[in-house]
Image 1 (cartoon, protein in one colour):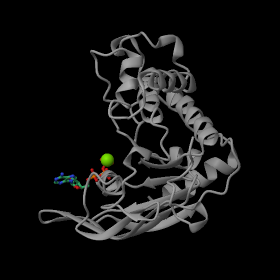
Image 2 (cartoon, protein in one colour):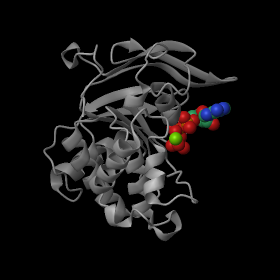
Image 3 (tube, rainbow, N blue to C red):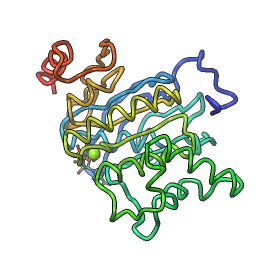
Length: 255
Ligand SMILES: Nc1ncnc2c1ncn2[C@@H]1O[C@H](COP(=O)(O)OP(=O)(O)OP(=O)(O)O)[C@@H](O)[C@H]1O
Ligand SMILES: [Mg+2]
């Protein structure tokens, strides 16, 4: 996979930079003066209580939503001028699988606007399905899959574009704890293999501690950054291990 946009040198620093972001919906001020940077190859978690503006912030970072104030710079380009959106994948909270398409057709959907040939697309889809361990289920239909398998299809559909930046909005929040933990391991394995930069929203403290290199802790009314915390624990991080549970406990006190 090509690692970064041609005119972006990771040595230059941040892959995404948000400066002074403000956003209101009508009278409701949702985000106030948010400034943060995302480093190439890191996993950054946006953590905060429900309604504090996490999804709004992720939508702004993804270019789906324009801020009222401030600026987002992606790979050195202001987001309004950024012309490599194919390098950015967005994994929504719901899996958004198309019920009338089988697994491989759903994954191929991620490539529908791509200039790749049919053979190249087929190869990409096969690779993505292998990566998430679903190659044997490529002909299955969404209704035949478990929740964890559906999450994997959604993840494969994001990965099939070979993104450099993966934005995730609580993609595992509907899974049972055991399946969620399996998906955490999968995500970490794939992230290390591909070197993709991940920005993920969560309101689950333990998920943030298990996955993230840094946690951006947001406070509500309006949403603003309370603190940015380095999670300097070695991996794998087992939630029941003392250092991990202690970090979670400390963080939980602040959320
Ligand atoms: N398009 C919109 N129009 C009006 N208000 C909105 C819109 N999107 C979000 N809001 C409001 O902005 C606030 C923040 O919403 P947001 O979805 O960003 O929160 P969140 O932190 O992601 O919450 P959750 O953890 O529940 O997903 C909420 O009060 C919500 O009602
Ligand atoms: Mg949300």
